Image (cartoon, rainbow, N blue to C red; front, side):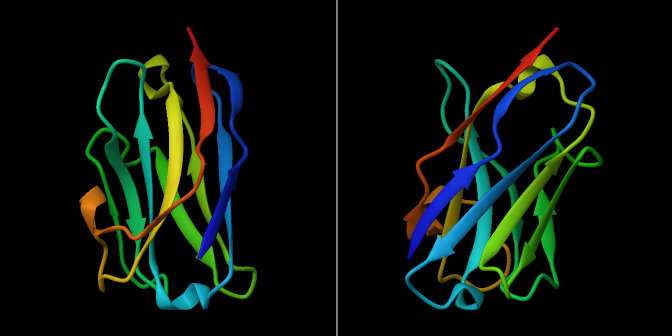
Length: 123
């Protein structure tokens, strides 16, 4: 499956962005989907994941209550709504697809990755 992330940009602290990840090539609803991020000089970290049917989600503690992951299987797209953004949310955000059931939080469990979209939060 091919993944194309979009929606990144520059936003002030406290602002909002919505990232999108469009999938093509295989049956989107077969996959759990996740968002990861990588800040400069840091390792890639888990942000959020959603089960194949949207029935279960999981978030990193650092974004819980501020970010919302959702998916539209009819549009082959997963979203990440980010509210109350902080400068420490600045990173390249990646979407990923996993054959694993449930809501995988480990990057090694993901089979396909998008190219990333940069989110910059100014203070």
